[in-house]
Structures are given as structure tokens and as C-alpha cells.
Length: 458
Ligand code: ADP
Image (cartoon, rainbow, N blue to C red):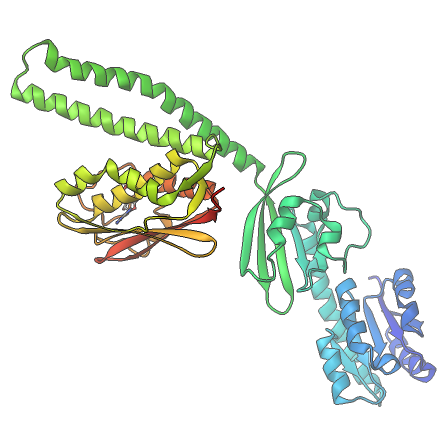
């Protein structure tokens, strides 16, 4: 077994010698001495101590700061604070500075040996955890509340091609230069949990999760997801290609179905069958159009944006829906100011987003039900709300309704759909740097809220 390295930091020769003599009784200990905190770093470099016995009496006023700095740089080394004349403040400083124990006169052999042994045992355990963390293939970093690095494992160093020198204690902005990561970490001390994707210069993509660890700081974990992104791209390409190739034959089928009735007499039963074929082809076409739209929005093909008044967009989308509202005897309440703020957007997509939300409200509100559309604004955002008094959405369904193909359980039997409408809404809103969410109470109705950033009219 290799010997445990113990470094005693004291300018008091008498104490230094006394402790050295006691500790020498254990043959597994190797004892070194340093008499001034100024020489501590070089002593650490030459002895690689597992444990430091630190005489706090020498630098009483700077002690808390010295201990905190030390911990930031050498979290792997345990410290026992030594106090010749122990005071309450000193013990408190020791605890706050992360010391594992406290030694004070009289130095009784048995006590000293047992305190040192226990501290070494604890530091071995934490050493094991450090080894496990450092060998993980996931990148792990921990920063303290001031943004200084207190732990970084090998995988994280490799990912960001960091030099092998001592990174501990440095501010993360000094060592990490990945712009995605810096942008993601920017609000680290105000946000509860952050996560996002970051791209590396070699094309790899990482999922980055920032978790708050109370009293310690922030844990940043990095998992490579390049293969998942690639699979997602292949799947999207496949869906787009299939959707595209299906559209032409469907258009042909619909065309011939329309012709059937014109080329000769059909009996009422044949007429009904033709109508069913027509409806089925129309619903597959709607599904394919939705899929192609999603693909286009996600691929960023609609990047052309112009300054658009949201109120006009809502009124425009209502034009295509007013007949359905009338046929369902529903009441439409509009609370839209004559002049609504401007947003920077793609008018076609914004209309599609409004159309999807309003047509859902119409579809899910009962016959004779109520639909309300409201537009309001804050200094920086325009808020659109579409409410209905339909069946509402169960709490367990609410987190999923913006996913592709998700259809909640309590929808009315006559409400047909593809489960893609809200996925399209979400993609459009996010493409416009906005947010969308639902507030809903089962049996009472739902309110969908869209918040978009306002732009100044030129
Ligand atoms: P769908 O084509 O099924 O309407 P959406 O993506 O538009 O697909 O909506 C997903 C699911 O969310 C719907 O199937 C429905 O269960 C629920 N939903 C959406 N809007 C409403 C609403 N206004 N009221 C109640 N449920 C709704």
C-alpha cells in the first residue's frame, strides 16, 4: 500500500514537531512540513498530499478567504484545521472553508491519530467518487456560484480541447470558448435548470444540461447526441421524401374521383362510396401537407420574414373559418384592438399558426359554444389568446399535445384530425422566437396563449 501523504502547514516549530512525532507512529503516513502559506503551492506540487493539517493561527484574518481559495483549487485534498488557541470564530471558519475536522491542544496521541485516520478515510471515499466522475465518458464540469471551475473531467477537457494545465479555480469564460455553451450558461445563476444543444466545430452535437446543486454550484453535463441528430435527420428526410412522392398519386386519385360522377349516371349508393373515397383522400392529403409543412418549417425554409401586424393576420385567418363558426352556431368574441403591435414574421406561417389554433377552438367547442380571441401587449411582447368552452385537456395530456401525432383522450368523437396541428403551431412560434402554452381545465375549456416579440414599425 502506498503511504498517505500528510502535509503540516505551521510556522510553530514546537507544534510541528509534536504532531510529526505523533503521526510518525503510523508507518503508513509520510509527513512533510511547510512553514508558510506562501510556500504551500510548491509543497503541494512536490509532495502531492492526501491531507493537510493547516495551522489557522498564522493567518487568522485571511483564513476564511485562504481556505475557500484553497478548496476551489484543490477540492481533492482534505484539510484539518489546527488551532493553538481555538475560538468559536475559528471553528466556524473551518467549517465554512470546507475543513473536514479540527485539531487543538492538548494533542493527545490517540485523538490525533484517530482524527487523521478518519479524515483520510473520508478523503479516500471522495477520491473514489472523483475517479468515477473523471473516467465517465460523459463530459462533467462543476462551477461554483461565481462561475469558477471546481471540477472538470477528462471527457469534458477532450470535448473542448482544453490544455491539460490546472483549470480549477479559473472562470469558465476564461477556459471555454464554445459560443453555444457560453450563450447557454449566460443566465446560469438565475435559471433553475438550463438545457440545450451545443455544436462543436468538428460537427458533433452535444446535449448540455445545467443542474443547480445547492451550496456547491452548478453541474454541467454533456452527452454526445450526434448519432441521434443524424437519425432524426434521416427520418425527417425519409418522411419528406415519402410525403412528397405520395402527393402526386393522391392528386390523381382525387381528380378521377371527381370525374366519376361526370362521365355517367351513378346510383345513390355509388355516390355515397365516391363521397367516402373523396373524404379519405382529402384527409390523407391534409396529413401529407401537414408533414411537408412541418419539414419545411423545421428546415428553416421560411426564413423570409417581414414586419406584420398580428391583428390583421388573425382577421385574415378568420375569413376562411367564419362559415364553419356559423354552421356550428358558435359565438365568436373578438377582443382585438384596431391597431395591434407588429411582429417580424412570415405572414403565411403566422396565418397558419392562427388558423390551426382557431380551427381547433371551433372543432373542440360544442355546437352553440363560445370562442374568444384576444390580443394584448406588453412593452416587448404581443400576446394572443384563443379560448374555447370545449371539453378541456386533461393535465396528463397537456405536456404532450404539442408533440407530433399526439391526440388527447377526451376529444369528441366527431373531432377528426391528424395530431399535427399543434406541432406545426409550436414550430412556427419557435421559429419566430416566441412561446406557446395551454391553460386548460377539464370540462371547462382551454386557452392557448402565444407570445411573440414586438418589432418597431419602420
Ligand atoms: P388534432 O388534429 O388532433 O386536432 P392538434 O395537434 O391540433 O391535432 O391537437 C392535438 C390534440 O390536442 C388534439 O387531438 C386534442 O386532443 C387536443 N386539443 C387541441 N386543441 C384543443 C382544444 N381547443 N380543446 C381541447 N383539446 C384540444
